[in-house]
Structure formats: structure tokens, C-alpha cells
Image (cartoon, rainbow, N blue to C red; front, side, top):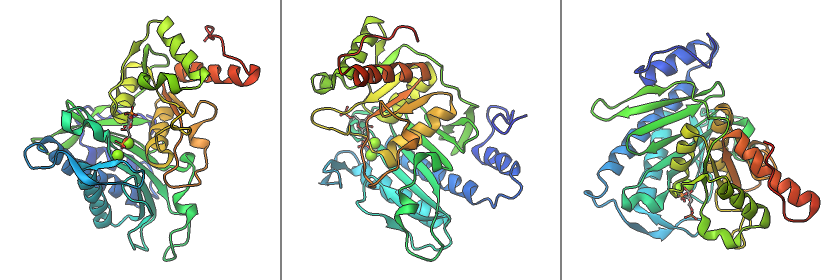
Length: 345
Ligand SMILES: O=P(O)(O)OC[C@H]1O[C@](O)(COP(=O)(O)O)[C@@H](O)[C@@H]1O
Ligand SMILES: [Mg+2]
Ligand SMILES: [Mg+2]
């Protein structure tokens, strides 16, 4: 039995699963396990707020903009507060990077060994229309000495340094999907019991797929290689599917096989998505599930961030599809001319 496949039955609680995983590492202190439980707890609370937000005056705009200049929704703010509170109370984390806060959130917890980067509410534009939304998180080990100030080396680590990452998808059912670097597992939430249960063990992304997910309304602003890749998808009669919540689009493609991309455009030269708290976590999961994630040229997990809210283009999903998209960029770079379709993959 490998560490990846514990052979635990469907229906095992998240708690028991985490405990079993921890038993595989006799020297582990249990702090990461506790941190994962804290995140699951925050997820349950957010799930509750989401399912009744239309009734408790939580729908709609908050009336302020975040650091990116985007209009915050009330649930963006609530989710941020809930997660910060859960991580502070849990005691395992020293600092948080959040989409909703400009600077580092120092929890003033010198004993916290971990740094968490998070998008507390992903897909904000879908909140008020009952469409799936999510939460994304990355967990890093603190690099600087405990007790001292939180430094750039703590918060600007490459995605390949993640010790764990995951997402919560609040959809037709809510699911927590995470990896600690030994495969990917998913836990479906049973609201009447208040528990996450193992439902998707050792998730594997189909190697290839027939779904492409991109905001095609921006087509005219994309660079030629991206336009050509989209034309290639159309020529193959792939299905276009775009929810507009990264977590939901990613999850569907993970299950069914497909590619999600948010490329650079004339109006967003580095794309829209944020490297530290959106792309890295999903890239880690994609790779652990046998998929891939690039910015069109290089592996997402190899990019060293220089800013907390840094943006990056993203191409993520089934391995063959991400490679195929990369070929269009490669050809465009090599020949300085529009790339021809690579049909051999
Ligand atoms: O409306 P667009 O430009 O297609 O952008 C949609 C993308 O933006 C995001 O909503 C950004 O996430 P936030 O809601 O956390 O800001 C992604 O979830 C989604 O894929
Ligand atoms: Mg987001
Ligand atoms: Mg968000």
C-alpha cells in the first residue's frame, strides 16, 4: 500500500483520513494535520454562510474595493474574516497572504510554523446568481527564524515549496480537495452531519480531454498563439465550458479531462489570476493528479514570486492539452510567426 493510496473506504471521515496519513510519518508533530482541520472547519462555516446568503443579507456588494481595485462582495469579506479567525485560533500559522488584504497578515504567533496563502472566496461574480464558487489555499513552511519578523522568504516562496494545497468548491455538493504531495483526495461535505467524507480517492486527471475553458469574449485581445490554440480547439470540436469561477472550472476539467486557460491579453498583460494564492495551489493539485500547469512557457510551480499579488497567465488541466497549448507558444517564439496546429500529440 503506498502513501498515496491508503485503501480507505469511501465514507471515511476527513478527520480519520488525516490521522491515517499522519501515522505514516512517525516524526510528524501533527501541526499540519491540525491546520488542515482548521481549514476544513472554516470551509464548513463559509459553506453555511453561502447556502443562506440570500436570506441573511450577505448577498451583494460590500461597498469597498480590494487591493486589486476589484469591488468586494460581502461574502469576500466574510470568508476572509472567517478563515483568518480559524487560522488564528488554530495556532499553527504565523502569517497569511490573502487576496483581500494588501499586506502580510502577521498573526503574531511565534510558534506558528506555517504560512498560508488564500483566495477566501473565488468566483465572486457568481455569488449572487447561485453559481458554484470556491476557496483556494496553499500552505508553506515558515523559512525565517521563529519569533522574528515575517520575511519575504516566508511569503514569496515558489509553488514547488508548498507542503500542502487545496480548494473547497461550494457547488451542487460541496467538496474539499487537497494534496500534501502524495496524490490528491476529495471529501464531500454532508451538511446534516457536519462532516467531510472521503468520496474521491487518489484523484487522477484524464491525460487528455475535449473541454476548453477560456473567456472567449476577450479573444480579440489575445496574442496570436492563444488565438491559434483556440482555433485548434474549435477545429477539433472540443466543448467550450466556462463558469467564471476558477475553482469550479478547474474541478470540472480535473474530473472530465480538459484545459482551463486565462492568458495574457492587451488589457491584462500578465493575465488576471494571482500566482501566490490562486495558481500555485491548483498547479500543485494538477501535477499531483497527473496533469500540468504552465504560464504558456514555463511550469507555474517554478516561478519565483516577487510580489504578493503578482499575476500570471495560466494554462492548467490535462497534461496533453497543456502541452499542446505550449507548442503554439513555442512555435510562435521560434519562428516569430503564427504557429501551425501541432496535431501529433
Ligand atoms: O470574468 P473573467 O475575466 O472571465 O474572470 C473570471 C476569473 O476571475 C476569477 O473570478 C478571479 O477570482 P476572484 O473572484 O477570487 O477575484 C476566477 O475565479 C475566474 O476564473
Ligand atoms: Mg479567485
Ligand atoms: Mg477571491
